[in-house]
Image 1 (tube, one colour):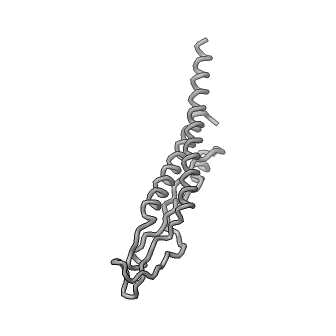
Image 2 (cartoon, one colour):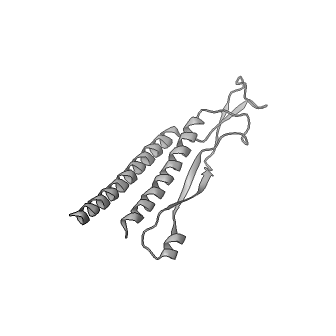
Image 3 (cartoon, helix red, strand yellow):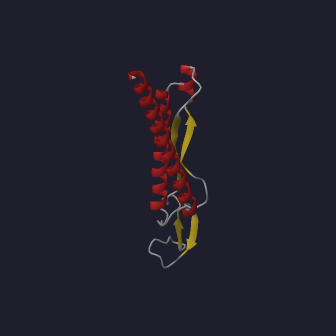
Length: 139
């Protein structure tokens, strides 16, 4: 595998982790929101990734990058809370809160951040190897 391919792979992984970080930030920002109906309540979102197999098969190379297939809403149940005095309560006195688990989101954010950092280090190591190779050619 070419060292240049390493940049493509680590770059696609960094893009994927960036999407993951943004999605997690959105979930955390909406964790305490309240709604008066199930349809209007924020639902936690998660990115969906896959190895970019189509490109790998057409190039006939073993290494593949990360493809972002999209962002989906989780199907965990929403939190329904009886709070008749709340200004957003529905006719039955219920308010609805998102299905965001703050502890899970913080763990996901740490994981995404570490994965991003690791891919930065991989790209930096490949850059250093290329620079050393060029220096060998000069001597």
